[in-house]
Amino acid sequence: MSDKDKVIEAFKNSEEPLNATKVSEISGVEKKEVDKIMKELKKDETIVSPKRCYWTLADK
Image (cartoon, rainbow, N blue to C red):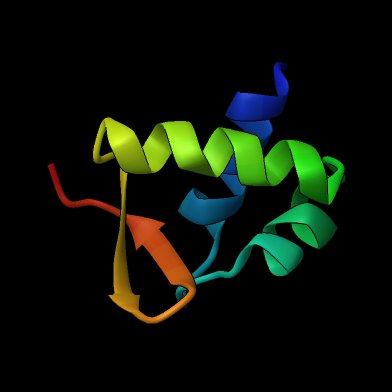
């Protein structure tokens, strides 16, 4: 499982929006790497922000 898959999995399994630190704790992926992956996910609109600095999967 790639780091990106682990990050997406963390969002899928969470019932509330997450910040990068929380995603890092849940997925076991280094925070710096999580930031990079989340930047990609934001760009392709896989994740959206319901409140400042917290993210959740977009409903597609």
